[in-house]
Image (cartoon, rainbow, N blue to C red; front, side):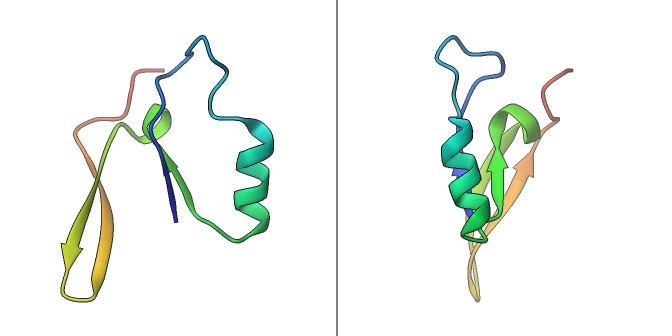
Length: 59
């Protein structure tokens, strides 16, 4: 899993499309703050889990 912290419509062009493609080819599940809003990694009895907190950004 990959967490990408990035602002919507940022001036830097992040996240880089080729990096996202490499992550996908490697089988990573990609979660992005510009699409899912506030994300948090939390400890569980079996490792880590990622949860969305709050509302996704407005479209």
